[in-house]
Length: 520
Image 1 (cartoon, rainbow, N blue to C red):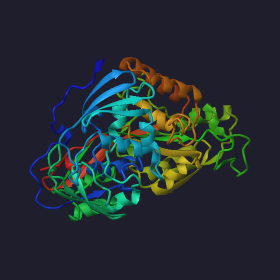
Image 2 (image 1 turned 180 degrees about the horizontal axis):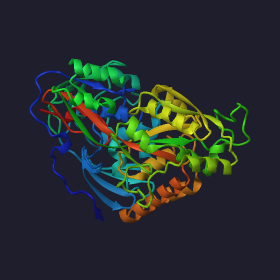
Image 3 (image 1 turned 120 degrees about the vertical axis):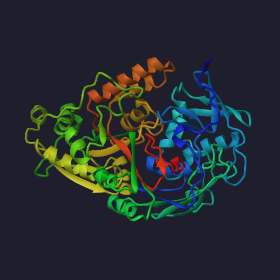
C-alpha cells in the first residue's frame, strides 16, 4: 500500500497562526457577497470564503495548496479505489454534539440532493460510491474509479451534522437554525446583502481565533470599501483595487498585505451551437455557421487580445501573466507552452483565411462585481477586437445574473475566473472545458465548448495513480485544449488586503478571506 500521510500532529497552519484575542469587534469589508449560508448549495469561491468560517472541510489545503489534515488527520491508499482515513477525535459541533463518521456520511449523502445546487461539489464527490465505517473515527472511502486527487476534492467537503433533519433546507441554514458546524466561528446572524456576524469558537480544535467578534460587511463597491477603510468604519478590506494600492500605502494608519493567487482569469467561447446566440454578420443578419467553431477564428481572437497591456494598465501590474488554464508550476501544466501572443495583423489574416475578412458582430458577457476590474477588462477587450474587425458588444451585469446566463450558454464569448484550489489542471479542465455531461459529472461550469479528443485524454489522465505519469498526461490534456484555443488566458490575480492599526493577516492563494488568519 502507498502511505500518503506524514501523520502531522494537530498543530496550527502557518497561515493561521493565532495570537491573543483582539479586544474589540473586528469589522471586515468583503468585496463579494455570499449567496447563501448553506455550505452545499454552491461552489463559488466567494461563497466558500464565508462557509469556511462556520464549517470545516474534511481536508484543508496549506499555503502551497497541498493537502493538510483537518477533520481527516491521516490517510492511506489501500488500493486504486480504496482510501482509509482517520477522523479527528474530540471535535465538537457548535451545538456541543460530537463529530464522527456518521457526519461524514450525512455530508456526502446530502450533496447530490440540494435543490438549486450548481452541482459542482456533487461533481467533485461523484467518484465516491461508498463510505465504510470501521469505527466512529476510522472510515474507508471506496471510489468508482481510481481517483488520485480525492484528497484535493475533499477541500470543499464542508461537514454538516447528521443530527440535522434529512429534509434540512437552505432557508434553515440562512436563518442560522441549521448553520451549525465545527469551524473556528459560530454563526450569530446574517442580514442578506448587509453583513454576517460571527463569534469565535473557544473550543476550536486548531485554537480559538484571535479576532473573537467579527462582522463581515458585504461591500461589493470598490470605492465604497476603500472609503470605509480610510474613514475607520471598517478595520480590514479584501479585494483592494490595484489602482488604490499606492494611495493606501501612503496612509500611516494602513498596511497592505499582498500574496500570489491561484485564480486565473480567462475568456471562453461557445462553440457547441451551429447558430450561436448574439453572434451575427455586422449588418445583423444570420451567419450560416458559428464562426467560433473554427479554431482559426478562436486563434485570431486570442491574437487580438493584448494581455501585457491589460496587466500593465488595468491591473496596475498587480497580476501574473498566464499561458494556460492554471498557474505555472501546478500539476498538469505544460512547460513547453510559450507566452500568449499579441499579433493583430496575424489575427486579421487568420480571420480572412477562415472566411471572415469583413469580421462579424458578437456579444461578450461579463460580470461587473466578481473579479478584480472585470468590467474594465471586458471593455478593453471590446476595443482590441474592434481593431481586427470584430464588432464586440460588451454586456456586463451582477454575478448573480451573469453566472446563470453564462452556464445556460446564452453568450457566444464570455469571461470566467477559476480558483484552482485543487492545485492541478485536472479539476479545472473537468469542470470548465470537458464537454458538459451532468450524469457523468463533467462540465458543470462549461459555457459551451466541446472537444471530445481532449475529453478522453483528461478522463484517462485523471485515473492514473502514479503521480509522475498523471502529471505528464494531465499536461498533455492541457496542451491539447490550448492547441484548440479553448480559452484565452489573461492573468492570475493577486490577493491584496488592507488593514488598519497593528493587526496582521496572512493571505492564501485560494483568495478566500479568513478571519481566523488575523493576528495581533
